[in-house]
Every structure is written in structure tokens, then in C-alpha cells.
Length: 272
Image 1 (cartoon, rainbow, N blue to C red):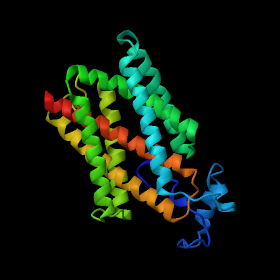
Image 2 (cartoon, rainbow, N blue to C red):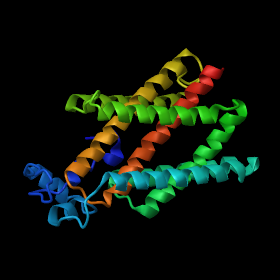
Image 3 (tube, rainbow, N blue to C red):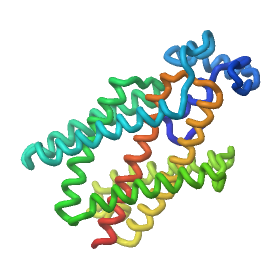
Image 4 (cartoon, rainbow, N blue to C red):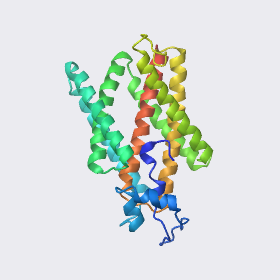
């Protein structure tokens, strides 16, 4: 199971049975796997009953990821330059609720197509545009630093994954899944604790604890990227349908957004 919930369905969407065109033949599915496929009407049932019309390729994932990122950048630019200061709070509130609801729907239903993924990217772009503008006004030049840091971390993790420096094993998966759940649990507790303390647990107050927590989040987000890369590679190797390219691109965008926000926060703490 991938730590990124939107990519969990990748391994079980590979084509069961014998493969052609030089593809490796995956092992026969177990009874439990077949039951899981048949209880997923959106994707699993189709994968178990007929071969895909076209198999997933790396180009499919890259193309759709670029499209989603471009959509997000355009929406962020609109939020930054067009939305007035008096309305930015309301617009951001609507975008965060919309993105959260749509993201959870796609993640748990394991359904992603062009309209849903593009709408999600646009909503996240509006949210990131408002957040980035606020940080840029407070810390001049911080946004380009955060973008550069995000690109460098993502490229670095792709490099170490491709050379085999980090291998996605079951133990690695369990550790990353547990760590991801743990940090999000701490975030929720910290949010609730603001009701009783102006600094909450100190995880976002800008002090030493906040710096350490952001560093931990960056490391965990980076490990999630490695798992995303591995799940995409497994999907390609197992002959997943090309329509999963939108699903894979959506998963990558989710992780990259988290990574960018954590780097932005860390830079702001260091500036202070």
C-alpha cells in the first residue's frame, strides 16, 4: 500500500493473467485480490474483466503531470494578481474546501479523469496563489526560493530512486505510511490545541520545534515521492490502463503541493 492514498490502487490495477508484447507476466491473483478487484467497480472490475485499450506509459504520466502543474500555476497567478486583498480570504476559503472535498473523493474512490484532476489543480492553484502572495509580502523573494527548493528535492529523490539508492521494500512502506499518518495526526492535534493556547503545540510557531517539525515533514514528503515513483513504475510494468495516467499525475501533484508548503514554512522560520 502506498503512503500516498491516491496511488494505492496502482498495483491492483495491473492486468491480471498472461501478458503479451514482451511484457512480464505477473503472478496469478489470489482469491483476496480478485475479491478486491470485483468490489472496485470504477477501476478494478474493468481491469479484471478485459484488457485495457492502451497500456500506461511514462510519457502519459509526465504529460498529464505537466498539464496539471501548468493549470495550477495559471490559477495561482490569477489569485495573486487578479483577486483583490479584500476578497482573497473568502476565495481561499472556498478553494480549500473545494480542493479538500474533491481530493478526498478522488483519493478514496480511486477515480480520476481530466475534468476532476484539472478542477482540483485549479482550486489548489488559487489556494497556493493566495498563500504564496502572503508569504512573499512578508518575506521578499521567498516564493522563488521555495519553488526552487521543491524542484531540487523532487529531482534529487527521482535520481536516488532511479540509481537504486532507496529501495521501496515492505518495511520502507510501513515506516513511511506510519510516519505520514503520525505527522498529519500531530497537525490535527496542533490545530485543535490553538483553542487553548495561542501557540498550539508550537509546531507552527516559528521556533526550534517548528523548524524541526517542518524538516521532518519535508523528509517524509520526499519519501512519499519515492513511493509515488515506485507505484507508477509498477503500474507501467504490470500493464495498467493508460487512463490511470490522470490518477498517477494527481497523486504526484498532491505530494508536490505538500512539499512546497513545508519548504515555504521552513524558509519563513529561518528568515525570522
